[in-house]
Length: 305
Image 1 (cartoon, one colour):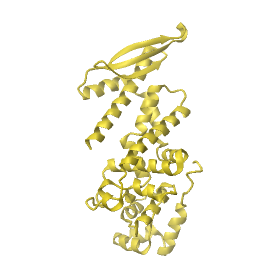
Image 2: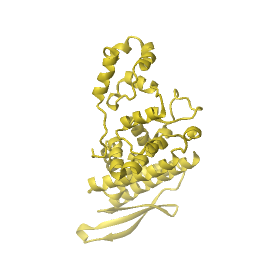
Image 3: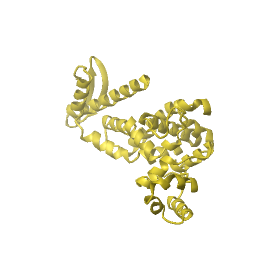
Image 4: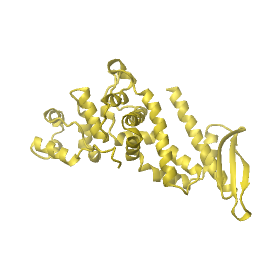
């Protein structure tokens, strides 16, 4: 973890303080009587349940039910949860403000979400480029798309425990599940806010802290998948014609040739790939095409919302 990502709070110390304040074990006090949960929250202000305790169902309940005395308290708790302290607190407030709450708190987080998407893309591409020199463009592109897809960002937002800190309008009941798309948007916005506050090192550390574990899995999947078959199935589901592959170039000596292939659908090029033989180049091109189709689908979904 980089030096810019340096404001972690000791979770064990915090929970020990809570237990001491309660006069015993937190789990022991609450487990016997669930009705005491609200009273305990009033008695002891648990501003942040450490992420390392997220698997504990009891602590998850407390996390969802916690309340903050002020917006500033909420922002401080969020900083503790995500592990970054802002110099400019207004950036974090902006990143956490949903459009339903703008009448009370100013600009929403949609512009930051837009910017955060580009920063995520850059950081993951940079990481893949430097750490996986043996993988071809198609494999790297598919892995990148899997790491920054909507579902992955939702998981990252949950790991960061962002939900309790998002500013929502009165029309959105905080006791109801927050739409997952909103969580993903908030994560992208927080990425942008950290970048604007602490630069690319801070943003990189934050992104890799919550998405880094997904990269090896995504890359392993991209290498093992039959991309040509997957592309054909995807096009069939979209009721589009089957792809055609076109050899663009074959270079190098006979014993070590490199092939470049393009994949086209309805005459439109969807991707290019390079390989040591035609089949490998076609697989790489299909991988790029799948990533481009996914990007087009996500753009269409955003326009629809």
